Image (cartoon, rainbow over all chains, first blue to last red; front, side, top):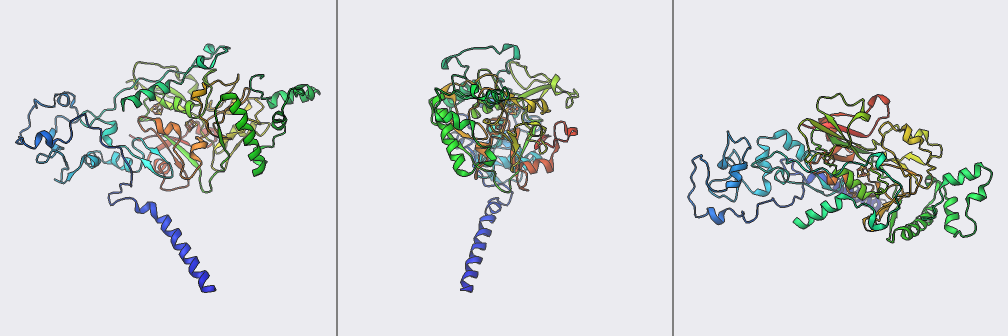
Length: 197
Length: 303
Ligand code: SF4
Ligand code: SF4
C-alpha cells in the first residue's frame, strides 16, 4: 500500500516537473522562443527570386541597378556602406546570407537584422521590441522585423491618427436612435485592413 | 431612467435619507428583478449561488436593452499573478489606435463619449511629468508622429496603494488579489469622490445612460470589467479583466492593437515575463511617484 502511494506520488511529482519544464525547453540555442510568425510580407509576384535569377549570371560589381527600381529609389538603409549582395545571397537568390557566409531563409531574416541591431534583437527575443499578440501566459504571435520595417527603408512610416476626444463643450444632450449613435472610427479602419488582406 | 429600468442606488439612498424610501421604489409596475437589484449583496460577499442569480438577472436585463445575448463572467483572480503594464515612450507615435480598441473591447459609451485612455502630447524637451493637465490631448495632425513632439498615453495605473479605493463611501471599488482595481457598477452611488482622488484622471462618469450601437456591443464580458454600465456610475480601465484573467489569457486590447508594439503586459511575479524584463533592463518610471500610490504601470524608454 505504502509503496503504491509513494510511486503514485513520485509519478505525479515527475509529471508536474515535466509540465513546468515545458516552456523553458521551447527556446532554441539562440534563445529564440518557440513562436509563430506570419509569412514574410513579399511584394506580389517577387518570390521565389530564382524564377528570374536562376538563368542570370551574377555580377558581383557594386553598381546602380536598372532593375528593382522601386527598391533602388527607396533604399536608405546604410546605403553608403552596403548594397544588395551584402544581404542577398549571390548564388541562390532565394536565400539571405549572413556575414559569416551562413545561408538563411527569408522566414529567419531576424538573424540578418540581428547582426547589426544586437540590443534590439535581444529585446525582440524577450518579447519587448515589437508587437506581440495572443496570450500573455500562453501562445504568442511574433512579427518578423520586416513586418513593421521595410528592410530597404526601415524607418517606421507615419500614420493618420484617429480623432481626438470631444471637448466637454461639444457634449450635448442628444436623443439618438441606434443608427445615429456615432460609430467607433476603428471599425472602419479594421474593415479596410480586412479588405486589403 | 425609464428607458433601462435600472434604479440607481443613489436615488434609492436619496429616498431613504428623506425618510421616504417607498417613493424611490416603483411599486406598481415593478417586476421582481428590480427588487432583487435593490437588495443585491456586495460582490465580495456573495456565494456562488448568489453570483449565478445576479448574473442571470443581468444577462436578461442587457438582452432587453441591447437585443444581444450576453455572457458575464465572474472569474476570480488567479493565484500567483500580479498584473503589470509597460509602455515604451520611445516607440509610441500617438496614433490613438489604443484609445478606440479599448472603447470597442470595453463597451465605452459612444454618446456621450467616454474614453479610458487619453493620449497626451508634449513638446520634446518640455518638463512634463508634473503638469499632465497642461498637456495637449486634442492634437490632430495629418500624420503622426510629428518631429517636434512625443506622446504619452495615460489610463488607470492600477495603483498598489489606490487613493480612489480609500475614499469610496460605499466600498463599490476595491483592489483584487491580482492587483486590478475594480468597480461594482451595481454598488456605485455616483458620488465621484474617487474621481477627485485619482491623480491620473483615469476615472470617468456616466452622466447619462451610455449609448452604443447594438451591432458594436461586445457581449463577452466580466462582471467587474466591460459589462454595460448605467447612468450615474463611474468606470475605468481594468487591464481587460475579461480577457486577461484566464489561463491561457489574452493580452489586453490596447496591447494587441498598438501598431508599434509600445505596450507590454504580464505577470510581475513571473521573473520570465515581458514586464519583468522591462523593469530589469530598461529605465522605467511611474507617474507621480511622489504621491506614493505605487502604480503597476511602468513607462520606459527602450531606445
Ligand atoms: S496605439 Fe500604440 S503608438 Fe498608437 S497611441 Fe496607442 S500606445 Fe501610442
Ligand atoms: S487594458 Fe484593456 S481596459 Fe485597460 S486601457 Fe487597455 S484596452 Fe482599455
